[in-house]
Each structure stands twice: as C-alpha cells, then as structure tokens.
Length: 413
Image 1 (tube, rainbow, N blue to C red):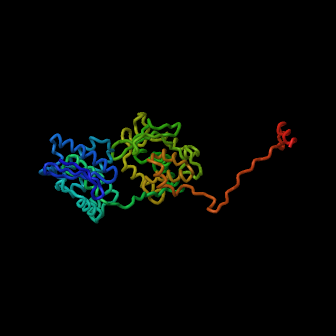
Image 2: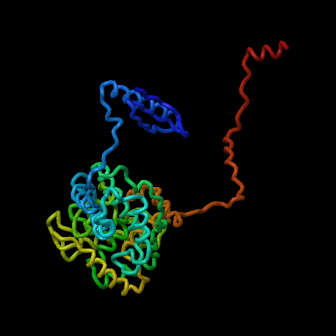
Image 3: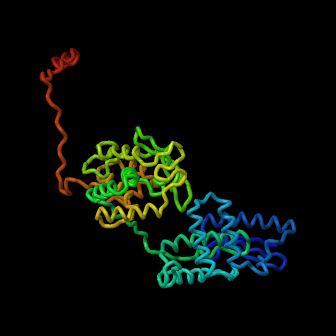
C-alpha cells in the first residue's frame, strides 16, 4: 500500500497505489493545496488499513439519466416549496423554463448537457427568432440573464441528484449588454401640467398621482396602500405591501418603511422638505375628498374596497391624462425617477432619498441619478480663502508680570 503526496504540474496531488490499483487526485496549488493533499492522504491511508477500498472505485453513472424536462418540472415544484422566493421571481423562472428551456433541451438526458450545448442555447436565443413573444426578434439580454439563473438552479439540482457530475453552466463565459436604466424624468412644468389635467378629468386618479409623485413609491406600492397605512395628520404612509400580477406581496426590498407623500416635487421651489408648500400639502385634501372612502381599515385607498386598482386600469387612465396634458409620453413609472432626480437636485440628503424610495443602497442612486446632483465648485484654480483672523479685544491685552524669581535672576545676571 502506498499513499503519497507530490507536487505535479503546478499543483499538489495524492497518489494511491494499492494492490495493483492506482488512482491520483488533485488537491490544488500552493500551501493550501499541500495541506489539503496531506489531510486527504491521511484519511485515505486510514480507510485502506481498515480494508475500505471504495476510494479506488470509479464513480458509476446511472444507467439512464433523466431527461432535462423531468428534472426541470421537479425543480419548478420543489424550489418554491423549499425557498422563500418572491412569487414574481418564481413566475419569471417558470415562464422562461416552460417557454425556452424545455423546448430547447426537452428530452436530452440531463447528463448530456455540456457547456457547449448551453452556449448553443444562448446563441440561438440572442439570434433573430430567439424571442417567443416577438416573432423574428432576438431575446433581450435582460430576459436571458434571468433565465440562465433558472437553468443554473435546475442543473445544480441534477448535481445534487447525482445524475450530473458538475454544473456545466459554471464554465460559461457570457456577458450580455450592459443594463441601461431608462430614466427620463418629467420637468417641473410637465409635472404641473400633468397634475392640472388629471384634476380636470379624474379627481380620484389625481390623488393617486399626486401621492405617487411626492413620495417616490413604486407603482405596486401605491396601489397596495390601505387606509390603515395612511396618516392623514402627518402626511405619511407605511409601505408594507405591493400589488403585482393580481396578488399582494412584500415590497421589493422586503422590509416595511414609512414615507412622506408631502414632498414639494411638482412645485417651482428650491425646497425639498415635506410639507414646505401649500401645493404639496394639498395631497391631504385630495385624499380626504376621494369619491369612495371605506371605513374598513384594510380597504385599499386607490381601489374598490377589497380590490386594488389593476395595472391595466392604471395605465389606461395614465394614457388619457398624458394626452390631455399634451406632455411627451413616458411610462407612469417615470414619476419615481422624477422624485429621485428632483429631490437630489435640491440637495436632499442622499440617504434620506434612499430611505424614502426604498432603494437597496445609496450606490444605486449615485449610479442612476448622479447627473442631477449639484456639482457647484469654485473652479480648479480657485484660490483658497484664508481663515478669518480673530478680532482684537476691546481692551488691549496687558503684558504679564514677570515672576519674582525670574526677575531676580535677570537682575543678578
């Protein structure tokens, strides 16, 4: 029996020679690799002394590996049951798996899926015709990026089932187009024209847009507001749910947050603090004058009792208002971008804006909205101003008396 640790081809290996059977196992490079190899060699030697020769056995492949479809369908059932995944996220995974992954890999044994076959899939989806929704179009890189996350998880399940030696997607080198945030905020005059038009057409919808524009909430968060969340005295709302795809769920970042809907975003003012203008405070009046205001605390503020306003209703009303306001069309989600860009342009604290809008980090705000932040400075060659000199006292300072000992020394000298 021989179990040796040697360095070979830039890495440390464990070489086993036992009763005519040989095997080599790579531990890794450097000092860490050497320690791993020595530890493995000790364990292997102990097993061989006990008569356990399983370390020399070759891994057995299953006679027939399950098809990709079988593994994918099992994953679609098990994954949401074992993980706290958002319903919308799981919907995206399910849609991509059923519309793209299963049609492509389908009956292929999962053990036959390689890095090359995954690259073929990516190439096919990025080519014209890769999209299912838009015939003749390529699948967007953003959709492909999300779908590859689902593929990674499916193949990782196959690895745990021991029907796949390693996850081949880890070997893929693919980088899609850089994500570009479509930020196109409304100007002050545009936002005021929009609010003026909606007040003429639909006062109830005007209240929704006013609160949305002055709070920085997401569309689903505004629609998910219940009366128990709203403080009409303080002008604040507790954001603790969102309405998306006809169901309620937690906010995007998971936690609840309290926001003010009195920021003077539409106003022509340099101020950003909530309630600093009469127009900003008029959002309270608009809420109190809603046509339907249920006494049930769990009723939705901008809905019909137990049902929030649907996304279809919101966008239909939005298009009508945009046409009446004669403002260049943008999606209603631009109200959130308008809030962030306006607040930052007025020197609102970065972390305050982040907390109001529920962004994951201040770095997201800087990446997307830095161009709207003030960049005032005196110029690269500006001469620094000297510090102000202290003002003289009313009575000039008198010289301190010389101590007696010091005076004696001076006179003796």
